Amino acid sequence: MKCVKGFTLVELLIAIAILSVIGVMALSGLNQVIDQKFIAQEHSDRWREVQLAMRTIYQDLSQIHPRSTREEFGETWQPALQADPRARYALELSRGGWTNPGGFARGSVLRVAYDWEENVLVRLHWPVMDRTLSTLPIRTDLLGGVNNIELRFLDNTGEWHQNWPPITTTIPESWIIRPRAIEFAIELEDFGNLWRLVEVGG
Image 1 (cartoon, helix red, strand yellow):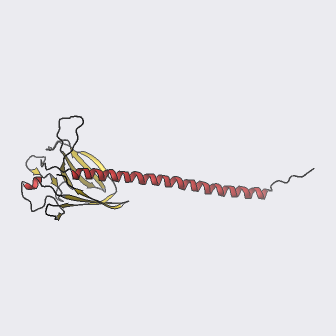
Image 2: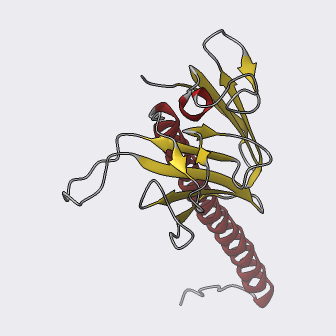
Image 3: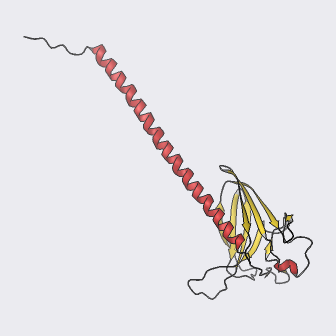
């Protein structure tokens, strides 16, 4: 009768140890693949968010309308485009092209403002152009992770300005004057510096 030799206890323990190491390595590799997938998805989602914000800004800036507006107390006028560190918002403007597919009783010009609060770029718009103290803006947190924003405005003589309207303009010209182009630069925590040069229509 032929004797069948089996594994010794030591051989079994070695085999189990090898299988355990292989299992741990395989699980670690799988976790890395899953982590990389989540990172790639988060990166893709973030980049989509940045692109949407930049497109919104581009649409607003490229459609600036020469419509000035009364401030809340109704005593003075605000320029069609205003970027002044003394103002309430970093940027405020009137923009055309406000579509109205529902046929509501409103115009096609929209009053929009941008502000920068605690590393968040905020967009606000009002349902009417000449608002009162009771007219509340509709707020959208457009983009987070914003370290800095900068604006420059190109006038009709080819000169760049940090503020708008230029201090050399007089009333009522300053209420309606628009730049030829606007340079918008934004510094993000993750993607660094992005900028866009926007030609103002009209």
